[in-house]
Amino acid sequence: MRTLVFAVLTVILAIPCWSKGVRVQEYALPAVQAIPYSSAVCGDWAVSELNSNPNNMYSTIGIIGYDLRAKQVFTIHRGKSNFPAITGNIAMWTGKIDDVESLCGTSKRGSQGNSLILYDLVSGRYWAPVLSTGSASLASAFGDLIVYESGCRVYMYNIKTGAQQRISPDVARNKYPDISGDLVVWLEYESGFKKSKVRGYRLSTGQEYYFSQTFEANSRPHTDGEWVAWYTTDIGGIFYEVKTGKIKIIKWAQSPDVSNGLAVYVKSTCACTATKKASKREVFGTDLRGSGEFRVSKGEIDRFPRIEYNRVFWIKGNTAYFADLTRANEVKLHTK
Image (tube, rainbow, N blue to C red; front, side):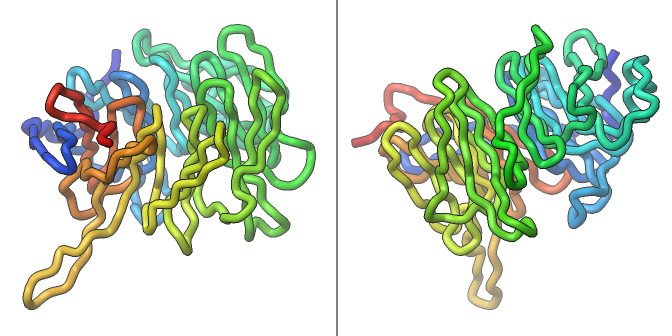
C-alpha cells in the first residue's frame, strides 16, 4: 500500500487564469518537506525526485508520486535516487545496486554502479530489469519502451518482451535520451563534455538525425515524436519540426518541453515596483502550429515544467502544480 508523504495536506487551490485566449485551470498539490526536483508526467500520474538541497541536483533523498486525479502525493522510495520517468502506470528511476535487493528481492551482488528500478503505481510492485549493460541511468519511457544511458551510449529496453538494443553510434559521448512515438533523441558531446548537439533516431525507418547543427544544446532534449525541444544558453528555447526541418526560437525560454505540438517553458518576467526591481520565473506555453504565447502559471519561482497532451506539471518551492489546458467553443489555441 502506498503511504502518504510525511507532509501537511493543504487545501487544493483552483486559480482560473486567462491569457491570450487560452483558459488555464491551475491546481496546487499537497506540499512536501523536501524540494521536488526533476519530474515526469503521464496521464493521471506524475513522479518527482526529492532533493534536500535545491542547489545540488545530486542531494536526492527519494522518489515521490502524485495521483493527479485524487490530488494526492505519496512516497515511492526513500533513498538516493535520480532521474525519474514514467510510462502508463510504471514509474522508474536510477537507484543504487543495493536498493535492488532491498526493494525487489533480486540479488545483484558483484554488480557496480547504478541500476534501473521500476515500480507499478497500481499494484505497488518493484522490480529491476536484467540489462545486458549492467548499469543504467537517465531513463525516459514511452509505451513499452525505455531508453537509457550506460557507458556514454544510449540503449533501449522493451518492458514486455525484454528485448534490448543499442541506439546511439559507438562513438562520442551520448547522454540524456528521450523518446516519444518512434523517435529517440539524445545529446552527443564532443570531447570534454563541453559542447553538445542533439541527435535522433527513428525506430521505424532507421533514419538518423542531427537536429542542432547550428544551435548548441545546453539541456536535455525532449520530443513528442514530431518536434524536438532543447535549451541554448545564448538564445533560449529551440523547437525543431522533424518533418519540415523548420526551427522556431523562443527567446530566453528555459527548461522547454513539448507534447502534441504544444510547448511549455519557463521565462523570467519583471515583477517591478516604483522602488524595487525584481524578476520572477513563470511557466508559459505556445502552440507551435500557429497561435501566440500564453501564460500557464502565476508564480515567482516556477521550475521544471513538463507536458503531456493538454496537461502541464511544474514545481514551485516544495509544492507541485498541474494545469489542464482546456479547449472550449470560445477558447481556441489554433487562432489564425
